[in-house]
Each structure stands twice: as C-alpha cells, then as structure tokens.
Length: 245
Length: 184
Image (tube, rainbow over all chains, first blue to last red; front, side):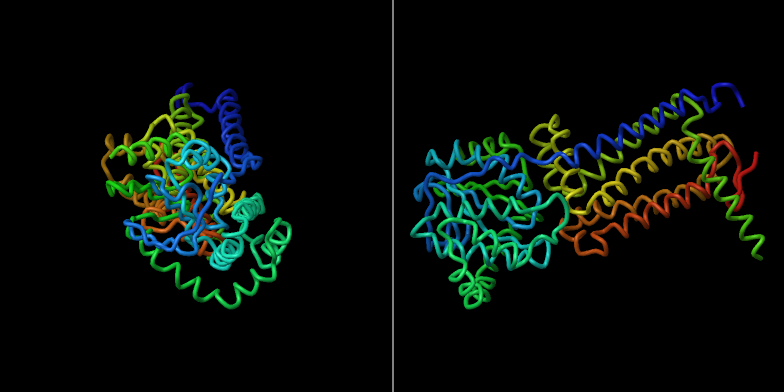
C-alpha cells in the first residue's frame, strides 16, 4: 500500500474534529430556542357567519384584522405543533403590523389537529375560548392563544392535557374556565364536526402539514398557498402577489 | 457451530472497522465523506417537510440555511435528541458508505462487476429503511412519524443497523470480501 493510503494522525484528528463540529453544530441549532418574547394581539378582531368564495366557513373562527380587508389569510394550525409556534413568534407579529393592522389583509385561525391525540381537544378549547370572548373582549383570545403556544416545552407533546389548558385559561384575564368547560362538554362534538368542511378545503388545497396557509383575494379569486413556518419575507411576497393579481 | 458463528462475528466486526476507517486513508476520501455526510443530512432534514422545503428553496435558494436550521429544530422538538442524533449518525454513516461505494465501483470497473452487485443493493436498502422520515413526508403526512413507535425512532434505528450490517459485509473496499470476511 502506498504512503498516501496510510491512516495518518492528522487525518484521524481532522475526522474526529469534523464529527465533533458536525454534531455540535446540529445540537446547537436544535437547542437554540425561539424568542418567545413576541406575541401578536391584533388591533381589531371580528367574527363572521359567512362562507368565503374559497369555501372556508368562518362561523365561530377567530379573525384578526378588518372585516373589509381585500385579502384573506387562512391559517390552519395545531396548538401542539412546534412549527406553528415558530410562525406565531417570528412571522406573525410582522404580518400583523404590516398587513393586518393596516387593513390590507385579515387572518382566519382554523384548526388542523394532526400532531397528537390531544390536538383535537386543544382545538376545541380554542373555539370555546373564542366563543366566550369574541364579542366582549377579543384581545383575551389572542392572549390565551399565545399563552398556549408558550406552554410548548423544548421537546415532546406530553405537556398537552386538560390540566395545562385549564391552568392557561385560569391565568388569562377576561376568560372564565367554567363557561369554557361547559362549552367543551356540551358543544365539543358539534365543534368537532364543524371542522370537517374546512379540513376538506385544506386537503383539496394539497396542504399536508401545519402551519398551512391559503392567501385569497376576494375580488379576483386569486389564491396562493404556503406550507410551514416561512420567513416573513415569503409571506409579504405572497400577500403582495395575491393582492395584485 | 458456535465457533463458526463467533468467528464470523469477529470477521464482521473487523470488516466493519476496516470499512469505517477507510475514508481516513486519503485526503480526498476524507473530503468526499464530509461532503456525503453534509449532503445526506441536508437531504434528510429537508425531506422531513418536503412541501415547506420546496417552497423555501423555490423562493430563494439562499434560504437553504434557514430551512435546514428550522427543520433541524422541528425534528428535535418532534422526535427528541435521540431522534436527531440518529439522523446525524445516519448522515455520517452514509458519507462513509458513499465513499466506500465509489471505491467499490472504481474497483469493479477494473475487475468486473461481481463485487459491486453484492454491495450496492444493501446500501440502497439501508438508505430506504433509515430515511423513513423523508419517505413518509413525501408520501403524505408529516405527522405520520409521530404515530410510529417511538416517534419513528425505531425505524431510524433499523436503518442504521442495516447500514452497519452492509458496511461490515463489504469491509475495506480495497480488499476482496468473501462471506463477510476481508482478506487481501
């Protein structure tokens, strides 16, 4: 065997260092937690009983932004989805400031329970909290919504249970646990069934995970989709394109 | 019989060690292993949420760093540190397997195709088994991994075991192999 083919100490050290650097880099990126400082409370929120031109039923869903905004952003989410938390803490506050609070677009929160068994009960909690505060104090819903995402731990889905959601609800100003519990017991099944039409829409749109978005222009009928926690710039481009088309 | 089994096991272990250290035998092989490792890791991580990855890359290919770091965290949060370590470990083993496979192809060209025929199907089979996250993502539902035993980690462990088995079976690609043993 020639000299070049020998295992040298230099190459062994290089390989060891490379593996350590690779593993360390992966571990660093994985454990770097998102800034959970930011959370978005829209300047205006509203409810609606309409079904939009895209086929999305709005009844009972929280909507951030002005009623007459030119563009709808349909946001399918799951409270147990870590990628949704990334969207909530990174892109959403900017979308809110630059597109929702300015009246250009409105954002409809839609349930897409797909991560774990508690995804569906979590979605029902959200709908029940919204139904309690939609008319009186819609900001309370957005505070509750952000607080739930902040409960996500660094790993796993074991955190999500009745106890955690009750604690978050008790902690949120202007939301009472008792009516929310009554809503979950009495209306849980009907809320679950009411999710089906919008789940059909998201599946027809070919969105295979959360967070999933359809951006829809009421007037022209133009629509685009985004899947995942994209950087804000991608949302801004997509909203701009749909507005202009 | 037992003696034969122990001998075969020792032969396989020696052969696996030879396969694992083969990339250390030249600078070019080491570089090719590093490139193979990084490329495999990027592909595996991006394929855990293909719709997102394709959209991000189509929008701006320079955002590949954003996509890889976002999905690395997503894999960690969904499958834990063990799941992420398995993906990283598989990437390293694939980097080694790619370098060894290239050497085998070169040798097979010189000496005939008999060796390569026995090894490549194994590398492909091991690859398919361990990239479960990506395959399931491509097939449909991202949440599907969470429904598998241990969040899909069992599938990943299976893939790594298969890859190690086939690496040990091939041994040092510069030597001829016979029934898992290496000589030459």
